[in-house]
Length: 230
Image 1 (tube, one colour):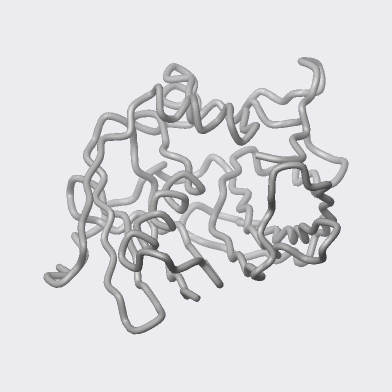
Image 2: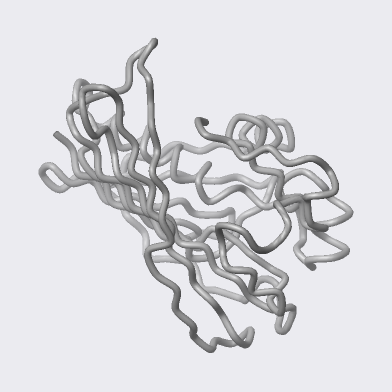
């Protein structure tokens, strides 16, 4: 929610993100971009109201692969956030750029059941997605513009943010251990999920670690995550 990069309209691309170039590599030939995953390491120095906060951002890695949808470029961005007392957290997030080839959503089999998992179910709706976009400064139209996401990007509905799923899973992990805090949290997107459909949160605790997943109405894994508690 901090350090947003608000742009005037003529500096925004068709997809609602800032135009290519600048801090992130342009990758002009790959018009689709999504959040593929992330990792956060927390210190015991929490942010408090009134703190002066700094963030140092770097492009940590760029790699290229070829997949079923053609050429893919992965960019890892590292953020180091601190206050006057020292480091607070380090975050890495992975952005994937891809072309328009191939189907938007590939078929997948339901994931194996976790019979011992703690479960919670919700139905993300357009209002939830809009609010999360606003809070995090995310202008990507796939989260709020139904004609764009279905007509241009070819998805069946509004896409539930990867970071929103991660936020829900982080809270679900803490619900399994009242009084604990996150020491490390890592998540990886497996497949998109969409508004208006049931989304189930699963948590399976193994000592100080909690294994987590989101699953769509068909039982397919959308997001996989791990939380280390302190």
